[in-house]
Length: 183
Image 1 (cartoon, rainbow, N blue to C red):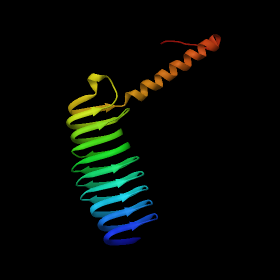
Image 2 (image 1 turned 180 degrees about the horizontal axis):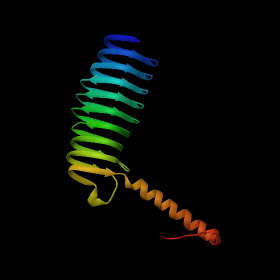
Image 3 (image 1 turned 30 degrees about the horizontal axis):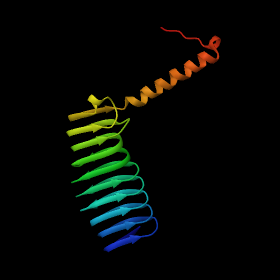
């Protein structure tokens, strides 16, 4: 385990340990605790506890607890707890809790709490806020005030459609081999 303390810490390879500075910059994967008055930035995957006054940025997957006065930005998947005074941006899947003024995730598997919560297709979880928005579904079900429960039924409907399509193809190809009984 290594400990880095300074005005700006910069690590070119994977790192495990503690970082304390104005700006923490890691080119590889990071595992440990990072505290910055300014920004924590990891180009690879990040695992651990991250605190920053301005923001935390992760170029890969993020696992752990992240808190920022401004922004948490996770390029791939996020597992854990994310809190920000401004915005939580999770560009792929969130598994966990996201608390901020504005929360965005492409695929929700957990809870978003904020003023504006946005999730994408096939999300499963709960949104609690003034405005809760999802990008798929019928127009009248996309926006919900106060609380929204997302069930992710699109995936189930897609599987049902694929099964029916395969059955239809099989019936056309070999009708004598298809035995359908309804009970």
